[in-house]
Length: 361
Figure 1 (cartoon, one colour):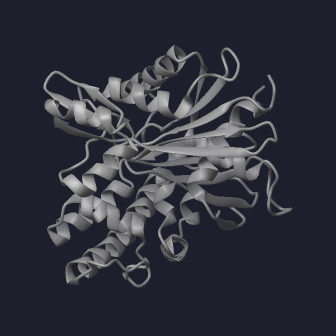
Figure 2 (cartoon, one colour; figure 1 turned 30 degrees about the horizontal axis):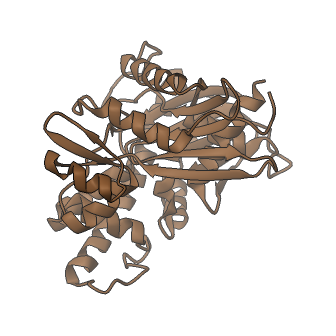
């Protein structure tokens, strides 16, 4: 296979993003919101004239992706998603048709017949309330989720290959170690998504432990919205404008900002801190079980990725909580932790997915 073909596809709760290598081996990133807005059926003629892509249901018309975001700011209401907490949402009956349209928008037609698409999948969910160690088992939700997207991608003329998203992050960032003392393709990678946070401990390309936690960026939105009696959409849009996690202040002032905006920003920063604390506690618990303890004497980089990490000063907040909780003590005899965060972590996750299949060829 030519190294100029192949697509990385990150299937997230909030975004679906693709990464393609062009003829110069430069990676082009494209993204579509993984969401939709339901409107009355009689709106379809006007939407068609306006050039807005939509799907007609039995009683409603669904505007998909970025167009839905543009309309929600004008019309109000709440966005709906075909995925929930990283997996296919059982509540959205028209989810398949919506996801088909999104995939058509972002993938287009294969450059060559059967072009490879490496698509991200979450790890098995770790029950943080469990009092016994998780055992390898058949995860029906993950199996269905993987098969569902594999079939959709194949129907578009591609060859589909699933890859754990946190493992892909590790592969991308550790092919060439940043530190001479590190081992290639080895690290603890943490991918912060909207619905889930995925973790993978990889040693010399072998995924040693992979699991997912059932919370991510959506948890921040929900907690902040509840604390300030706000809609999820308003909190999400403010979060994406930018909130400094160390000060709780909005980084980009808006014309209509008021005291409620300030309260929302402060609540977002508090929710982020709680999210990281939950992650550290859950990770400690996972590796505290004897069955999950491992001892790797090498220097282990800790690599962060995902759109949730884009918040200003996320790294400072994470570093404070991570080191403060002494996470290393739960894993075994690691020599050193190195915290690494790239300028655009969501793209790094995708580039990792792009590079994954070629490491396997």
